[in-house]
Length: 137
Ligand SMILES: [Zn+2]
View (cartoon, rainbow, N blue to C red):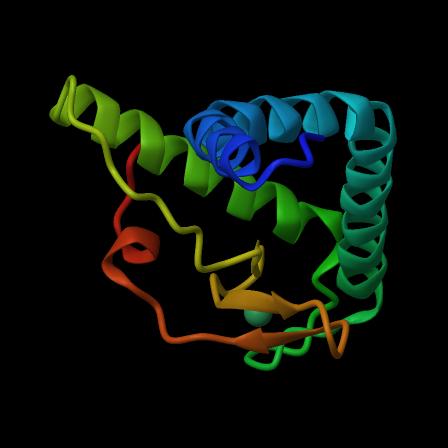
């Protein structure tokens, strides 16, 4: 680092010009270095959430009909979501949608839609929307 005030000012000016590319490069390097750590942690967290969802579905009874939800309710919600997305892609080709899945389980017996709360690890019935009432098959 230069000691003379004029040289110091020039050095700071150069540094300011370089700051953006350097910080971007630094950010990319940090991102790449932490990737081997963040990817497995993210995968573990996703697996943990899925395990909690399945465990809750196995022990939760439908608030409408009283039947145990089970894994079939999760599978039915997944199928409904895939059908809805296929319907959107076929009906409006090339259109990009902001898709938010508002349900995690659909009771196989009565069709009640439920949303999983990850904090309380429990299901709560939600009001059926147009997506859930329509049959896309
Ligand atoms: Zn039910």
